[in-house]
Image (cartoon, rainbow, N blue to C red):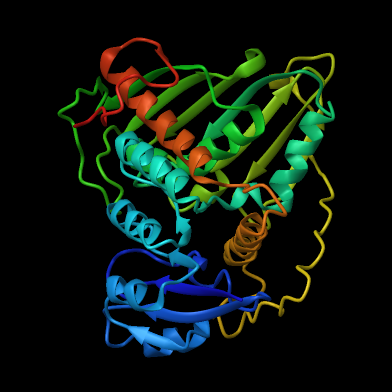
Length: 378
C-alpha cells in the first residue's frame, strides 16, 4: 500500500485546478494519508480528496507522514523547485503539475537528485496519456500521413499571447511535439514586444506565477530529427474569448495532415491531400479514437464529488489523464512500466522555451542542448 500526500493551497493564487490533487483518489493500492493546505477554510476540499489528515504546513506533513508519493498541485513554478527537492530528500516519489522548474539550472539539479535518490518524478503533461494524442502519435508512426514535413504549434493567443502563452500553454504543445518527434536539434526565433525585438531586460509582468517572461509576439522555427520542421506562433489578443479554438497542434505530411484543437471534445481530425501540398488540403474528417481499458481495480471517477460537469470535456480531460499519469507512476515504481512523462522529458519543454528566448535575444540559431543553462532573461 503506497502512502500519498497532497500539497495544496486553496484560494492562494497558486492555481490548482487541473485535478492533479485527485489523481490517486480511487486508485487501488494507495492510501491518501494527508493533505497540507495553509487555508483554514480548506476542510471541505480536504474531505473530497479522501485524505485522512489535514496539515497547514506541507513541510510538517512530509516530515511526519514520510509519504511514498507526494502530489504538488500548484501550477506556480515558484513552488516546484523547493517542494520537489524537499520531497525527494525525504525519499518520496513525486507527481507534479507543470512546468517542472523555473530554469534549466533548477531542472538539472532536480534530475540529478532524483537519480541519486532513485525516485521518480512524473509531470502532469496530460497529452502523453490522452487517447486522442496517443492516436495521433500512432497514426504518424504508421505512416498514415506519409513522410512528416512540418508540425504547426499555436498557443491560445489571448491576453497572455507571446511569452506568457508560450510558458503556460506552449509547454503542453512543446512537450507533445518532443514526445512525438524527439527533442529538436535547433531553433531560430523572433520574439518581439510592441513590434521591436526583445532584449534580456524586457521582462513583463505575468497574470500567472510563471517566472520571467517577455514578448507579445513569438515566431519560433524548430528543427526536429529526420528533417521535420516545427513552427510555433503566439500573438497577443488575437483570439479574444476563443483561445481554445486556436490552441493546438497540426502535423502535415506528404500524404495528409492531422490536427487537434483544445476545443469541444478535442477531436483528432485528418485530411488526405496527396499529391497537392498541405496548404491545399481537403476538408478534415474526425478520426475515431479507441477508449482505453479501465484501470484494474480503480473506482470510477466521482465527477459530482469533484465538482466536474461530466459534459465539460475540458475538465474531464485533465481529471482522466492525470489519473492515468498517477497509475503510470505507480506501475513505474513497481517496475512494470516506463515512466511516460518523467522529469527528463519535462526538462525538454523548458529547454525549448529557453532556446526560443535565447535565439530571440541573440538573433541567431540556437542548438540543443543549451550550453548556457541560465535563464536567458536573467
